[in-house]
Amino acid sequence: MQETSPFLPVARVGEIPAGTGKTVEVNGRLVAVFFDGETYSAIDDLCPHMGASLGAGVLREGTVVCPWHAWRFRLCDGAWCDSPNLKVDVFETRLVGDVVEARVPPGESLA
Ligand code: FES
Image (cartoon, rainbow, N blue to C red):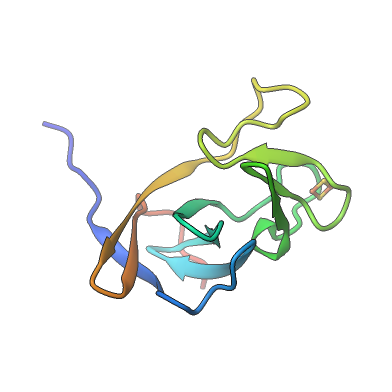
């Protein structure tokens, strides 16, 4: 039986301005959490191009724009818009009261 990762807190409601994101360490990984004004999304923070923090990117029409060279990744499935075979991980999110939680599988230690 496959073990399911637990939901873990990543932000509080009101903490992330609409149209932006932030980077948090969760379960040994860096996760970019975004708020589009209605819903929260969470993806792997590391841009696969040259390693920028996607949490510092801006949201545009369901995508995050990397702050370094403007590659765009879809929040729904993590795909790079220019070549959807390249993807970053996407993590399930939910709201529990005023806490945003994400289901993030364990990563390698960041220590
Ligand atoms: S590091 Fe993200 S587009 Fe270059």
